[in-house]
Image (cartoon, rainbow, N blue to C red; front, top):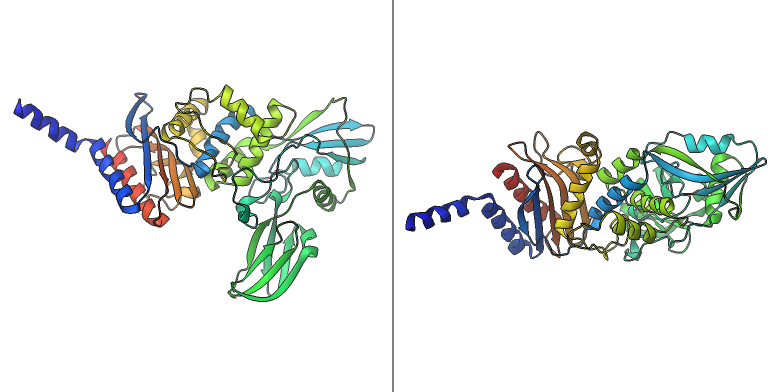
Length: 424
């Protein structure tokens, strides 16, 4: 009997779970945060490890996983750019939230631009069905000047951002329109920078000891501004109109949906994520409102999640979002069933290779295909992990309320995932 207990003790002490638990507890003790880790074997369809898997964490950009999954179900192969109606020689257009139009971060095949520019008659833009705020609930209001907090809109253009480049003493603007809103300040700061007024598009440049040469700043959206930018870009006179009551409209498709998914999942593009949720809402209703897409998806596609999510936006900018590690893993399992593995892995960030995992866990060949999520004091990584024996696991490693540097936490997370890779 003693020998039996001795062997049982040795087995437990040498099991993969023992080593992983040890690394997790070290992480919590050293970094003063909370860790949740859930690990699932796709081949055996069994959970292999669970540490706080049913606890809720702030997912940050891991929220994009559920936006991705919902979009895969609803949007089809192509992005829906706008609805349109032709009346005599007039073209009436209503945007469906397509983020790709003239957005520098995304492949643009030019279809939307050509279709609008080549129309011979008048062009009218309607916005009756865009029914949401520019910012999401729980977003940090003081991020408004940062590239990752572009406003949501029904007919986005240029990614709803201004690209500014300093060349010698001159400033180049894209779109050119915003050069008229620009001024220089006499105030000297530590870093040279450009600040936009909160309630307008007035831009102010501040000199600094450390020079900046390029900036990407969200602009304040409005129907009037969209029409002005469209008119300037197409060299056409665009007018505003209400959508016709007798709707006999057609839908114009722009680019392949995977072109958006790739940028959203690899580079963690918040703007694309938010606009995709508006696109999903437009598929299941006549209104561009993210809550509609969230409610529909939660009921139709997410009813089997082990823990009901608190899901409020598309990107994860909101601190109101809450998911559990085992629900994130279930999402990855469901996505794996929906999308062929070869296509799926090409859309995701890859450790040591591409996207937000490029500087994470340098291994050859890569072993992690997935998604990161970061808000201050919260950092998560989840996705698919290939073990030394060639098994594919889904995992979610979530960290909340840590007060150490992200670099320290990342090292600990790498240790945990390497234990999985080597022990299974």
